Every structure is written in structure tokens, then in C-alpha cells.
Length: 256
Image 1 (cartoon, rainbow, N blue to C red):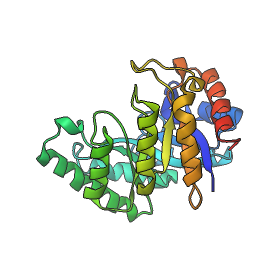
Image 2: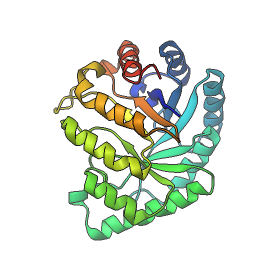
Image 3: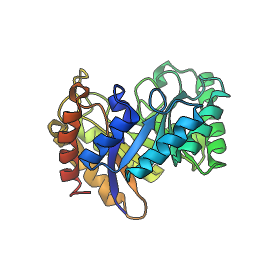
């Protein structure tokens, strides 16, 4: 098995589906996470089917549906549209956010609500053969490694998997420790970008000290399953920056 390289579509909210697929072809990226806020709106099953067909025609795999559903915050019925759309898109997993606030700002009662909702939506998705992926993101219950690991244990469902990305300013050694801890929890995807501690976007090559050991570890663990390295947040939202970052990422992965 290998680490497949692709794109998170919300990187280019200013581009349409066809333009993104053309860019994927140009950069030889073969995987995409379609976002629900612009490109494939939740509930628009017809758009999802059109996008699925166009993506397949370009030889690109849909590897996730990027939802902004926040477990424990949204109306529970909102997930029905998300799941229907993901199925129509042919997405094997749905990326969600774990709650409306960070772990330090969340009461025990609120955390229990998030856990219950995560368990509910993971079970619903599993019934359709779809996984749930919790993005490791500030302002959610995955904002620290300890909180995230506890969350997966509390939900206790094998259909819930981690998505990892570095928090701004994260030390490379801490990043590697987080990925090491998440791989046994079936870490499936890393969102790949390079930022300063203040959130300024850099060329991916500037993040080599963090990303090269992280990606080496992911590759070493990828023997019996496929994982994904999806580019996101390029400098200046510029397609030319994606072209450069794709070359960098593939070189780190040995041409994957």
C-alpha cells in the first residue's frame, strides 16, 4: 500500500469543480477531498453525482467529503443531508469537527454531548459503508493529543478515525509524537501545509523539518492500508503555489 497525494478542495474556494479537476490533472494529484461549503453543498445530491462522475472521468479518487458538521452543536438532522451527499459523491469517509469549542472551554456535560453525537453519526455512516474522520483542529475536542485520544476511547467506535494536521507553531518533535500516537488509532489522512506560528502561509518546502519525519513515519506504517497526504492552504491561494508544493510533497514521498 502507499500514501496517495491529493488536494483539499477548499484550498481553492474561488475555483469551480471543473477548474479544480483541471488543476489536479496538471499537478498529477490523484485524490481529492471535496468540501461541502462551496463545491458540493450538503443536501445537493445531484451536484454530488455530477462531481463524482467528473472526478472519475479525470482519473481522480474521491477520498473524503469535507463537512463542517460540528458534532454536539448542529441540529442532529443536519447530518442526514451530509451523509446522503457523501454517499452520492462516493466518498468513503466524511471529515467532521469534534464539537463547538476547545477542550479547555468544554464542560463535562458538553463533552458528553459531543461524544454521544459522534457515536450516533459514526453508527449512521457505518450503515452506509462510510467512515467518520475527526479533523485535529483548534477550537474542537481534538485540539490537544490527550483530549483527542480520550475522545476516541469515549466514542469507542472503529468507524471513527483521526485526520491530522499541525497546529500553527507546533514543534517538529511534538508533531512526530502526535502522529506516532494516532497511527494505532488508524490515522487515515494528513492535511499538508506549512504555516508560521502566526498563521502566515509558507511554501511547503519551508516546512521540511516538520513534514519529512512525519511523512516518513506515515509511509513506514502504511503496509496494509492506503493513507492520504492532501495539500491544503497554499500561499496566496495561488494555483502556481500548488504546482510547486505538489512537486515538493511527491519528492518527500519518493514519487508517490
